[in-house]
Length: 473
Image (tube, rainbow, N blue to C red; front, side, top):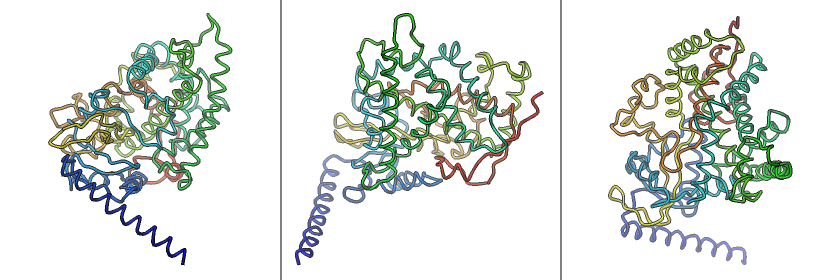
């Protein structure tokens, strides 16, 4: 009897909570004129639908269905909070440009817990400005030209020298970008320690888009455990570098700049900062590399034109001669491929922000404290902004504008005060990677599958790239 009473009380509580939830929802919507939409189930909202969509080969329906029903600005409830989604380029631009004024950075707990509270992604105000500027000094054009390009070229060559006739391309790309990022941040060359650290990072990243409840999500629990291991490993490096740091023996990397800065950062702050930068430099660029190859494989004319451009560059150089800055600047079609890969792939699908005050936009009100999501992906794949938007067409960028609308709607690297500080570095890494790939190898996909926008470990194993060395006389 006691058990039945408990069940009855629980059902009654849930029923009352549900009724209150929808009453508040309706009354608040009428008072504030929220964007139309659905908050889904109490507590869970539409989080499970969003996660399910992004674990398929085609995550577009979550946004497509809602845009068709409600318009380009709609309300949903994800990751525990009511959220306004924007698939409108003007609204997205307004959100990006008003960072720190009308909006502030805000990400789901699954992301913030894994990156750390001191990561660049979560910093705000003057501290973010200083750290963003510092990061850009290690990834600007002059630094890449004078120092990083030769490192990038060397590491890409080193990896490709070890390739056999069957390569899991995503895995190899991740090794390349991770080692490049570790080199830039901490001056480490590839070794067993860097590879061990990379494997833990794989687990960390898998936890980003899961429900941040270790009890219910095995993936998230593994990610938290891996994040702890990563932090411990980086903490040892930071402590060792503090001991070794002496005037006149400084290393030219990000860690040295953090240790020598006037801000007096703690070890925890430095570790969080490094964790986030490793994620940014590793996961996104390696995925772009893999998808660029996939798109080119599916577009033979583009691949042939790319090969022609790089064969001309290589013909002027000896076999082992590295690429120089002038070579990079003589890759116009490569940059079209990069632009189109970024647009179609949308590795950064959008950004989360939080309204700092009630905001009126497009006839709607976004309440103070509500989270907003500016969806770059929805804009980039909208036929109103790009002709035949979901097809890979690098030639659309040959006139320097791939958009059909009069405004600049391409935001692959974000915008405003939080424009990705490594945007130029990512472009160079991808260009160098493609140069050595197409001049040294030919390849065919092991299987013909549908386009995969967010490759997973499972997908990698099903879709290796079979490579064959070209004649390297």
